[in-house]
Image 1 (cartoon, helix red, strand yellow):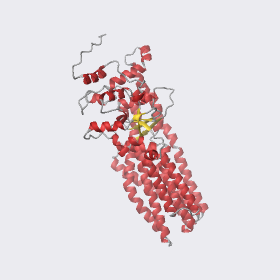
Image 2: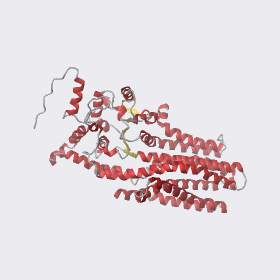
Image 3: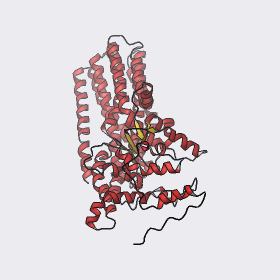
Image 4: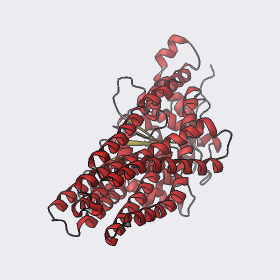
Length: 522
């Protein structure tokens, strides 16, 4: 074995550069889990997300060093880190920001909006709501959007405890080479101090060395019960677009029913229905194609995930330092070799089993096995067949449905069309069922297209076909209820049709977990 050569005498004026080279080449350099408490830094989530995720941007800007210094000043030392944000730098800042809004803000926004709409409905029943149903509906929509987009800032204003996250660009000094080295070498320890790992996944994620190491370091302890939040950025955008389409649909309902009530003449419901269809058509032509585009993209991405995990090799994962030949393009300084750091850390993790096996690269083989087996069992169930997580679906659908309720309650009280409160309750139930069927159709048609059609037909042909099919099936699902209730006027007949609608919906949604399990097993 060739001994490590003696260190040469430092050249005057070159001490800082030599220190960097020592860290790069020293065989003792590795990622330690024993971290100086001063290096455990976090940043409030509202600052991390400010200016629509400007800190996630990879665009070059002037005064880079000043910007890096200002970003680092946003972080602070902390005893605990609530969430460690794991992401790749190839994904758009906008997609990551939307994903963070869905993860951290959607549930509080839904709870707030539902409570506000419920309170407004109660006040409306006792004629205590100024402005009537219009005020109730506006409060429901406004409260949801206010909390969804600004919840983290509201927590700061209300003096609530702020969510502290670890975000590499802010919490690791980028302007000071020595501090940057210390921060990078402390990543394993920072992960150990984090309560939760949040993964903003894209198809690039498992091709990046650091991303895989972060997830592996978080899950390597088999007894650890720390949660992992795994959300594809494409599904977050899809959910937001579905919410936008649903908002347009609710506005169409409000305006068409308002026109019908204001006209107060026979057959005004036909004119209102015509207006409703005219209003929905632009939403269907404008928002729905974009929604289907990202839905198809999401399901295609999920198909890649299983293959990435099954064929994963840490030796093939990419890292920026090796791409630029360990030289910072902006400053010309030498960079730490991330691959060497991670490989040495893996060797320390598995040194006992490596001695038993005698295999040279046993630590790399063990880490590959961790990714392929442990991560496959923990990640794939979160993604399933590509179905968005149920809590986020309900968080984005339910507030919009409850915001419509005060209007239906008002129509029952004024007996529009001669219908009482019970008739309008059934009409509201039919509308909610139709909206939920629409969301299911979007997912089902996208998945069917990816599996059966997409390989043979270009997307610009598939999307108009799916768009027409979804709108046709949605309208077909709803029109029997309207026809029966209008022809008979019987609450019993309308109740039977509405019950059948919800029964069909329950059968459809109850089979989704079974299909997801079969997808995982394939």
